[in-house]
Every structure is written in structure tokens, then in C-alpha cells.
Amino acid sequence: MTDRLARQYAQRRGHRGEWLAALALMLKGYRIVARRYKTKLGEIDLIARRGDLVLIVEVKARKTLVEAMDAVAYGSERRIEGAADLWLARQPDYGRLSVRFDMVAVLPRRWPVHVENAFQGRN
Image 1 (cartoon, rainbow, N blue to C red):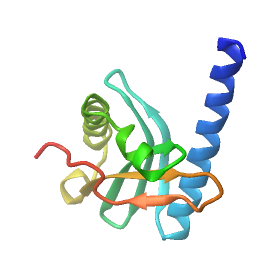
Image 2: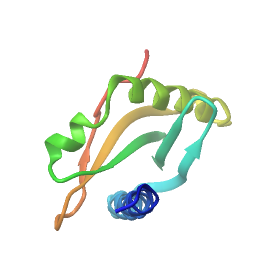
Image 3: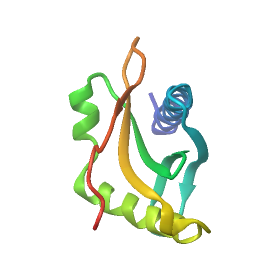
């Protein structure tokens, strides 16, 4: 498989994983307010909201839950936090919001696994 084809395959798998993760969160009562939110500091796969709770969600499509959890490295966490800070600063109700950093693992032939508080943001 060429590098270009491998990248296309990974991108399709990632988009499908994000779609499944969004569906799982919506069925739990969350509203998806942003997908693939990009900033100069980093990218957030999904931003979901239910009331005053905002979820900053990293989506990982892997073979096992352990592999998905291990795929979120410290550097990735910092980039996600920076992007979250920029998104939050633009919200008119910023002072009321509670923020949580979650992960959704998309595993083969299973419903996506929602891991709450996958990592802690800066205080």
C-alpha cells in the first residue's frame, strides 16, 4: 500500500470513528457543537455539550481499549487543552461552563466506549 493510500484509509477510518463517537454521545443526550475544531494550537475531534457541561472529546479508533488509551500522549493532551482554551474563550456563557476531557474509543465490532475524564485539563 502506498503512503498516499495508507493516509486516505486512515483518514476515512478516523472520520467514521468520529461519526460513530458523535452518534454514541448524542444517544447519551449530548449535543455536538463542533467537529474537528482546528486552531493554531491543536485540534479537537468533538466538542459536545449537555446543559453547562462541555465535553472536549478525543476519538481514537484502535483494536483495544488499552491501545486507544495509550494513544493519547501527554503532548496531545497539552495541544487539546490549548485548543479548548481558545474555544471556551469565545463562548458567551464561559463563566458558567464545566469542562471535562473525555475520550471515545472506537473498537472493531463494538459500540464506542466513552471514557469520562480520560485526562485532566489545567486548573
